[in-house]
Image 1 (cartoon, rainbow, N blue to C red):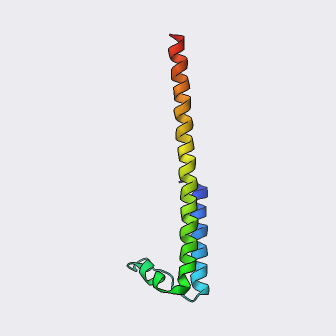
Image 2: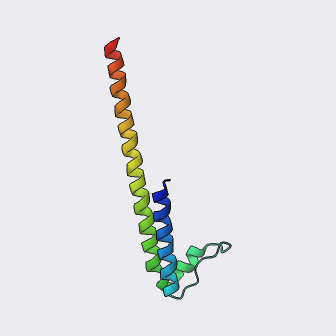
Image 3: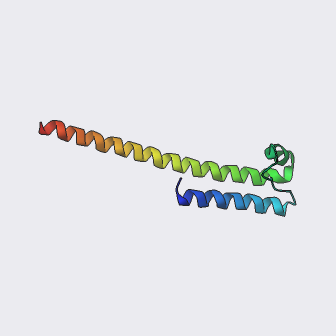
Amino acid sequence: MTLQDVRSAQTAREALFKALKEAKIIRPGPTEEAPEARLFADRKATKALLEYIGAITAQRSEQQAAEEALRADCWGIETMEEDDREGEG
């Protein structure tokens, strides 16, 4: 995970907490078990939660696409180098 990924996740989390505060909903605490059940039960929290989930999902999709592109590129370079070595021998 890059520094940019960490910052994006932090920004999304801060937006969630701000939306919960504006809706006067107590934000999840570190010792609360299953806070998502409590939050999804409150209609005022649903929009904020869905926006947060969307932001995190988009971030992960972008990260996965970048990793797949890197793997595909690395594989292509290795194959070309292998072909070059076979042609030399």
